[in-house]
Image 1: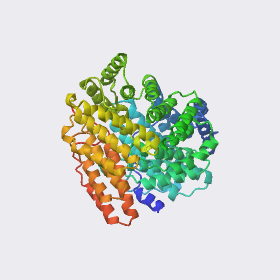
Image 2 (image 1 turned 120 degrees about the vertical axis):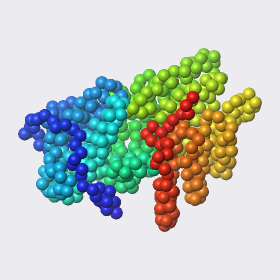
Image 3 (image 1 turned 180 degrees about the horizontal axis):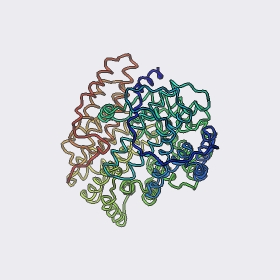
Image 4 (image 1 turned 135 degrees about the vertical axis):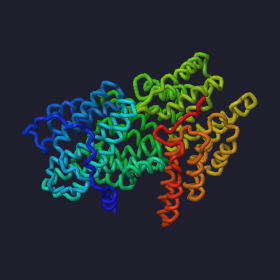
Length: 610
């Protein structure tokens, strides 16, 4: 079935008119480096990289990086990963040059054929070198596009990056046809090619399938499409092809999806058992590999085993010193592990490390640090002055990537202004952050983590009730507390009480002055809870109400991702029951949305203007 889907998904022929790279200068090709040798050398480099020898892996590729497209690809990939982790301008510029050179070298070895659109391509005339060059070209072009997004914020760069991704997509489609229709004499070469095709097609389908309906419809209009099941299937098949360059990369994408993406922008329904099973061979092969130790720590974290998670994340940090930037990813997870344990001092410590050392989003790290500091009991005058300074600095730290503001930075700026407006205070901002970053999907599995949070929420509720007359933002505080209380009650097995708390948020809508995002999120939580109790029609109604809520766009991207994931879950449940008509009706109700509506996009999160 999956194979048929693949053919349907990529039934269009390649678009050979889309060539966005200038013709490269003539590069002498060494006669001593054939394709098989290049694959073996690249495999050695990948093993070095996964064993934490990052610089050695890059050096291994450099002697042939000007002539061999696999050497160029591997070197460019290593430099791309470094640039993506550091956001250092010098690393970005070096990576751009390396990847651009890789595209040129791949382009030199690609098959040149007629520009006539009706010309049918005969894949049997491709050599193995030309086939692999096409695959490497697609991979390099994708890296080049992503680097353009973080290199320059101009609109021209953004459009050019999008065009390169589209060209990359068509190259993968051509590779799919090549894999199916070409006769392969070298089985090893075919397997290497197949794993790369499955990695590319699987990742494209998986990533695109997670986007909300509005973006999906726009992408489908320009030729993209996404199928989650197909994506997961292709990646799993690519992972099972042992001893290939891209097999561990397929595993990395799969584990990343199940352990990170599904929790960050979904409903936390990743397959943990499957992830642990496919990660085990990688840990056996690379026992000190920082990447796989990180994933092992993350899997412990999402099972609410915070002590084990902290141990594994620290082990990942201690496993290598070459790329300290990779430590930042571990610091991020360590920060949340301590926040889940309500150890606000340690959470604040890791937020401060990220603020000082990471270049990704200073505004985000500053807000995290300030929010955790707000959770400390009985703040001193010195602490309050420190908080005032932190919150006042956050608006100045805002940045733009690819011409777009980071959505969470906008919310952090809004909250920093709200802090000053409320007389230098915020209501349980640490617990609010856990909710906003989908942390309840993780801690909900462990009552020992949830119960102390509920006690803190009840304590805060008593305080705001006593000071209600003097609190001009009582409606905002009450709604936030009820939303968080509902989440705790839900995961403590008290759905009826949780439902009352969520409905309290809806009923307090008119009293909310600033934090209207709480209303559609409460609707979404009611919908998700109904879905989990198999009340699918009621769930759909709540989710559509949340999706179509027009009174605010705060955190709208996060809301739409959660609603989209829940709707997909409902569709899957309807299909499992054999109710295909209801599943189709759900698609229609989603597709009926007006695309001209204000709203959702990469930069969809906004804060009401002053």
